[in-house]
Amino acid sequence: MKQKLSLLVVCMLALLPIWAIGQEGALIQGVVTSERGDPLPGASVFLQYTTYGAATDPNGAFSIRVPQAIATGQQMDLVAKYIGYRSKTAKIRLTSGTITQNFTLAEDVLALEAVVVTGLGETVKENSGSPLRKSIRN
Image (tube, rainbow, N blue to C red; front, side, top):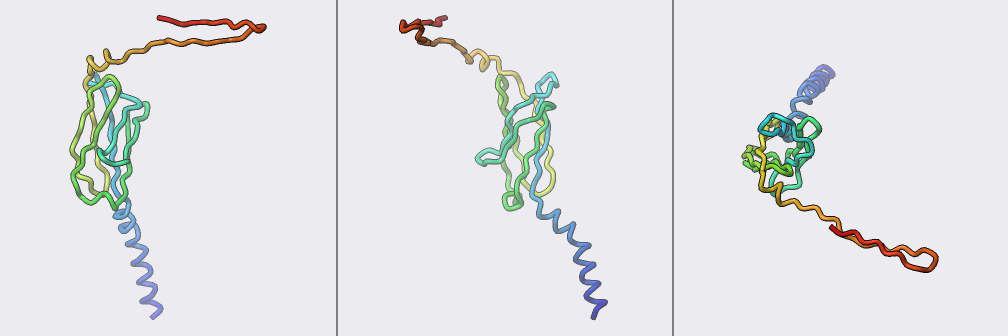
């Protein structure tokens, strides 16, 4: 009886890593670069219509962990966005294990022209009871 119990415990310990691997969910990883091959740090990469996403590191790399309960084999859209570049969408099948998806984004010249920065403001300071006004205009 003692030998059978020992054998059962050994088998359970041997199968534990296999069970743990099946419970880890999905890991989506990749790199976001420009058409010239430069990494795009701070780009947003996310699964559309979910709260799962990440920003790329200084090398353009990202990784997103998705729980096993959500990684059930369905097809989803993975989106990469970066200011001044056209966003790109890739269809991925969300299964447990590691999924690698790289993105190469093209510059969007028209989007850069849409950004306008203006400085306009007014401050009021009082000095010895008489107000001083300083205006900033373009």
